[in-house]
Length: 198
Image 1 (cartoon, rainbow, N blue to C red):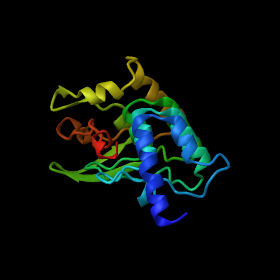
Image 2 (cartoon, one colour):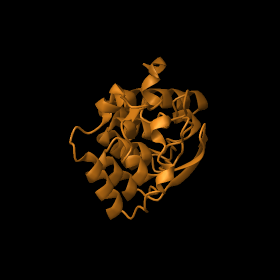
Image 3 (cartoon, rainbow, N blue to C red):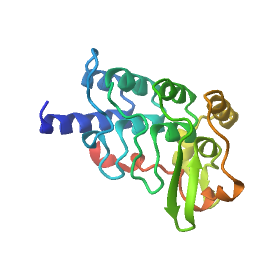
Image 4 (cartoon, rainbow, N blue to C red):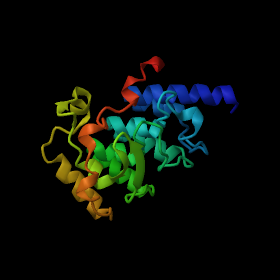
């Protein structure tokens, strides 16, 4: 596959992930498996560098995540995007309580003890999957409608996510001083703003 074909495939795949179109993803990726790395630069949303896998995990498209993991064997499941606060597919699945996707990613070897450091206006901070699962879904005290629409409506979603992470061997929560999320907007993922692809 040439460079232009790969870039076109990447653009179509991101578009299908944004739309939740599992049939399109299935058509784009051959059933016999492929050596493609769907976290590579041709398979990233151009603005925030979210991979197709991160896009699908963010929106809770379990069937799409399953197809990509089965058919693109070289996809880096722990790829970290370039949002203001870095994220992996596992992180977004935890943030929005998509437990089925958490299980799929863990079965593929995704790191459940990820511990990313990042710098924001308050200095150096750390995020773990457990702290992400417990994020308040608001920014500066104001609920974000996108976050509300992506979250599992079950009020026990946080508990289910934390329980799943603990069963998978996720580590402990960071010290309380690291819970500064109310001042840093993690609840509005970059990928939903990528309408230039639609």
